[in-house]
Image 1 (cartoon, helix red, strand yellow):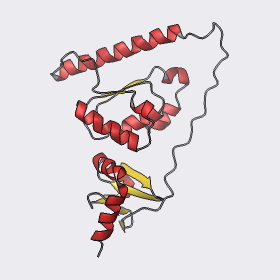
Image 2: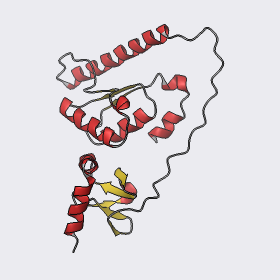
Image 3: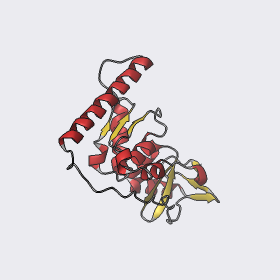
Image 4: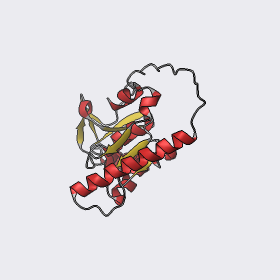
Length: 196
């Protein structure tokens, strides 16, 4: 729903959106991709530096432009030596305030002329259509096998998938997807060799 919600915002409202992804590693890549592609200017990720590198790598492999990936502030917040959950929350809020102040200063410097024609609201684009690519590794109706770990995945609830070579692949987690996208052929060769 996030891409549709962001697309429905007028540009002036979208410019005011700040986002902090704090899903504890479960949906980081999905949320960040939607926010970056949706045009949110201020995007932060609550993570370790090591996890941030992995998330940025997967976003790049998924085709998110590197200029957008570079906009993700990670770890989120100001570096004030925060350790406890309360201190981390304060550092994140301070980071949001700092970002908002920088954006306001830039807007003042680049202010448009006194009068500008009104902006016409954009139509909300339809939700992205599902891929027409055939599913790789169908095990039974509605289920596919991950080429990375061999796990069976229910297609209807799958969050992690990617199209490659004209086929759709499903994965159990973002790390499996990242590993596959780095070297798809090695996983396809291994999966083929494992067939009876």
